[in-house]
Amino acid sequence: MSAAEETLASLYEEAAAAREAGEPARAVESLRRAVALQPRAAVSQVMLALALIEAGALEEAAEAAEAACRLAPDAGAAHIARGRARRLMGDASGALEDLDAALALKPIDADGHYERAQALAALDRRAEAVEALKAGLVCAPRHAALKALARRLSADA
Image (cartoon, rainbow, N blue to C red; front, top):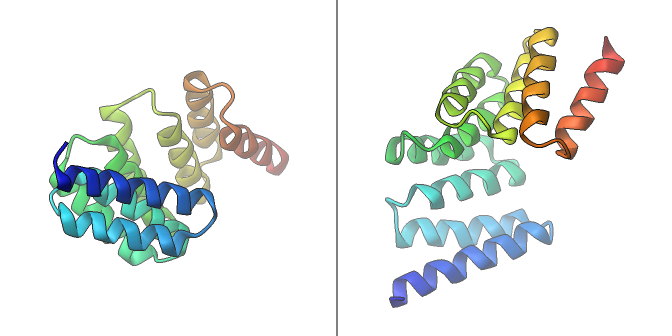
């Protein structure tokens, strides 16, 4: 492993530890350094986008996810990250486009189905949101967030 690869791996580990500790700002800093080290690595951009979402920096998160989508247009995770950021910024229709693209690339992604259900619920398309949740639960029957959203949508019905 080269020195750059070791540094990148160390930055990823630091970011993961920070996210696990509930310190998104520290994760963002580590991931910004990872992006600076390898700006064409889509995985670094996706990880940065997710950490920025946790830190509440949604516009920056959308920019990082957009960069990831440009670098790796066939990476479902990039589309999911951009969709999540867009949904949280209030663009549920745009988010739905991203999430549909992600699920076209990888139909068995439980997180993609979860985010799609969130976007559909934001658009008051409850029946479709429930179907998205069912598809996600087929992928991951124990997915806690999918189950919680399904309970919430059922209670709201």
